[in-house]
Length: 129
Image (cartoon, rainbow, N blue to C red; front, side, top):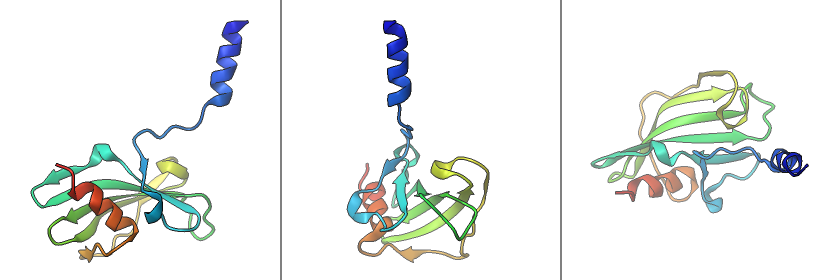
């Protein structure tokens, strides 16, 4: 009986775990129906440039067919610039479901700016040693 109780307790108290994705600090989160995360295991720094993966999770989306997207971003830490290297869109939340390549505007580098997601990500990747 104890064993059955423990199994039931584990099943009913479990929450979806996305251990690799860490939410961006609350002040930098966009308002609305999305949450932005980053994967600390994907941070790669080489001299003045750093890359990481960002996950944007939508709670609801009526305009497109995807509920989450992953973006591979590169930061120029000295120049305070960012560019998107790759985007993947997913049919379900948290990067699950069918995936397809997303649109990337050609060219490039954009200023990180003050505040916002890119500012928060820049602080994370550019201050790590």
